[in-house]
Length: 189
Picture 1: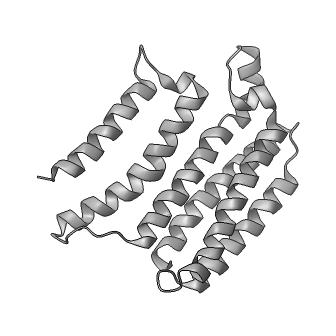
Picture 2: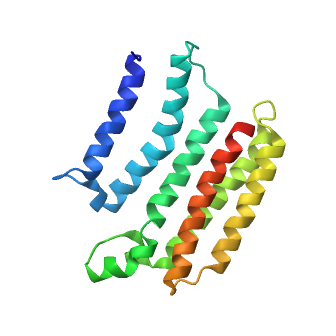
């Protein structure tokens, strides 16, 4: 049996998942709420919750860990970007069926650029962290791994052709590749 804190984190996730997808509420239809729920669950609850639950299962007392705090916040930002870019491949259908998304409202190019700029800021922060807190992070991984990701991010954006569905799908898939790249780096941070 887990503690009240773990149970509360779990129940928050269940509640958010329910109001996201189960009728009659289905907040997935409201872009701001949908994006917020995806970011909270995929970013914070998943990363922080798993860390906390594993420590508890191993009978290790909880303590704040700068790496876990970093990955939880970084992935929350990243999940927010995914929540916005997930609609890029569906812009034409969303417009046709009058579904309001940020991508259908502002267009593929502006949403892609905004997403790249948000991730750019996150990567630059990750690159700077080992210089600000050298005792908490491995500089080689944080600087090297995030520089590689940042360069890849700008390359995929440079290749994006907003009017071509294949290009849009490739861009969106590449955002997911970067998301999983962070989990490759995570054990070495």
